[in-house]
Amino acid sequence: MIPQKATILCIYEILKTYSDENHILSAEKIREKLKKLYDIDMERRAIYRNIDALRSIGIEIEGYQENREGYYLVDRLFELSEIRLLCDAVASSEMIEEEAGKQIIRRLIDTQSIFQGRMLQKTLFIKPERNPQSRQLFYTIDILNVAINQGCKVSARLMELGLAHTRTEKENSPIVFSPYATVWADGYYYVLAKEENTDDISHLRIDLLQDIVLLERGADMLCGGLNPIQYAREFILLKGERKERFEIECSRALWQSLAQAFGEEAEVLREDGGRISVKILAIPSSMRSWVLSHLNSCEVTGPKSFREEIQQIVMEAYQAYTSIRTNNH
Image (tube, rainbow, N blue to C red; front, side, top):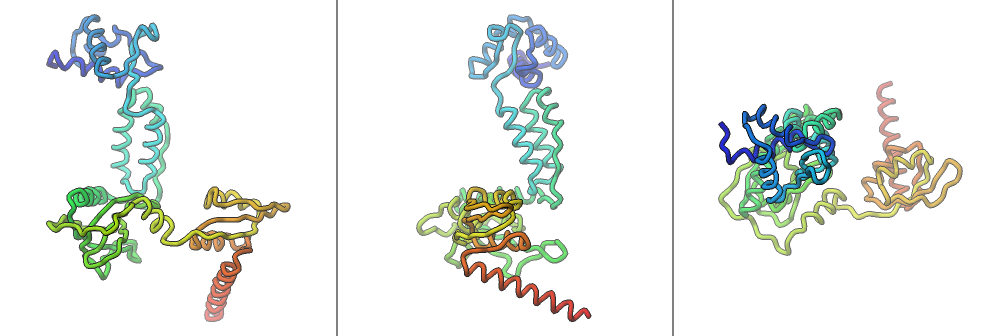
């Protein structure tokens, strides 16, 4: 038997689950659902009073005065579009196991009405082929956050990816370090930290840390502080490199690839028939990878030193492949 004082929560749950702007509940419909779902008999005047009480604490509920039909819950934790975006992010994440992802998505969908939930469930979520990380990753993040908040050091085994796609322990493992911040960058979680007996800040991939232990030792103090966003941009996204200006000529058909890779940092200088000349602001490693991936369709025109670097790479690759052919014959 549900206590009388709890009936207001039952009405809230009915509105949350069964009402939205396209599915409005009359007072009579609410009475029917109270009886069917909770075995509660409630007169209409009591329903009106409970809805007024919910409104009094800031819950937005539209009623007869606004629509002449009945009640529906306006105030939700997330908009439908926000839930769709969050579901997509969870489903596509390489860091979340499929079963765990389904549970998170189910809880997100439950913040909407059942009718909106059915709309969301018609969207197909395709997982990437890469193996997602287990819940151990989130446990490690929790321990790191505790250490950061309490100012403690941690110890952990430092792993690397072996040739058989298994994790093997690195030679300098285990390590003790002072964690300062966790960041998500370039598709991975990192911890910004300083290893014991070193002076420099570094970043460690959290999914490659195992057997993490919170230590009863205070973290090393930082001289000058740390800006996690600036560090992540400079040393993770830009890999410690400085952006430089490059110029290439390529087929106009490659513009979509350039725009996706470099965004507004790529600027068309001129177009001549099916060819374009493009100025690009990028870090050298990214520019090098893009040029080598489109070697037969583009030509580096500047700077001269970068053009010569590409020539050297191509020549060395040619010699290596020629040597293999010779040896095989």
